View 1 (cartoon, rainbow, N blue to C red):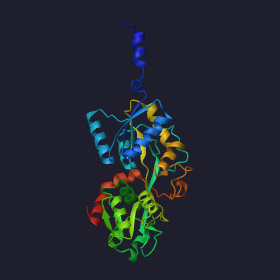
View 2: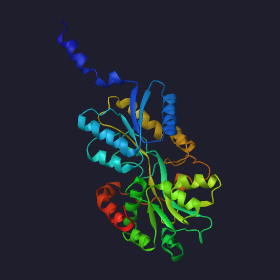
View 3: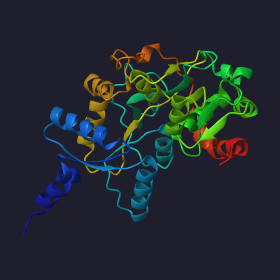
View 4: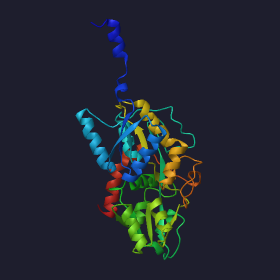
Length: 322
């Protein structure tokens, strides 16, 4: 029979040891990007194997919430498009704080001050224009000009997390204010479901101007489409594709290593190779993209935007339809 001392020693062994070297990642990254991300991490940390569940952010969150309700969350690490979902999880007490992560080189607003989630890139929203447009916009207010009447298309925050953050940030920006989207609607702007619809409308010439995420417009321009992209003088909003560790992880050591890799210069260089603006200052962006330090980011109060999201979505639907 084992002695009491032996039993106490066995009980003292951390349960995470049963999962050492195994991580489960839930992500909304596209399949190719997710595979590249995991492969790069496993090469940098060959003692760890990462299993992946990949789907859209909504589907990822639905799966995770179902697992929470069942009392059996399987994910160790979460990597999704926008910070609003992360903020909701933080408020539910689902995320593990990681105060030791190195955020030097990351602008405030790209990571949670409580260090529970961390932005891994900047996917900004600015103005795309067709080169046949009557003028090149340099300000968000240029979209309110008579020459832009009926020629502006924008994504709906009812479908797009990036659009929701843009809507919320604009309402608090002193140069734009809570009536900006009312003015857009009065100038006969139209809304489509997502950023892809905006790209199609402007690229085809059906509309002169679009509010859209940067990489879609810049990649289209690089391929020869008759479009350009502007970072307006008031600044831009951004989704940061944040990463976080669930508090229920069975392998916090390797989960922290995964987060550290994404935030490291090597992880940020990978983001640039994948076609995104790195969130870490000093890491070169893809060709044709500005570096992070040259981008003026608007204040994005994610807790407030989350709190006001239901009201803001209803107001948007009243203006532009559902």
